[in-house]
View (spheres, rainbow, N blue to C red):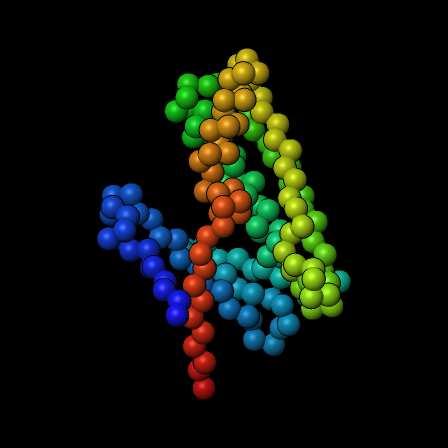
Length: 163
């Protein structure tokens, strides 16, 4: 028997609760083109031709890296302000290695996701190296997307089959 705890306003005080919601759907007549509704934002996720797509948008793993990079940039900015650290700029380059044998089921011993992700952070500002180390450590402790990737998040999937 599996027990699932659903996050609700009873487990998180309402003044601290946010609940992002996304809707994705395969565009009819396509193999990999996915429309995404994220609040009032709409965009396309697709695969490159080498993976059967038409390359009309960045693919899901590109978006994962983008989410990690963007969340880190925002977290650096927020925490620099909170810690009183002057930050004139932050830029992050990310890359990850995926063995597609896992995705295509070619080798059951290969996981379908990233084998690892590398991030190179460039900070600009006049503070001492020690202050930027303090900032980096704080960001690593508070970045939500980094936390999701490194600590794992329970995911509950419910499948409805519509006729």
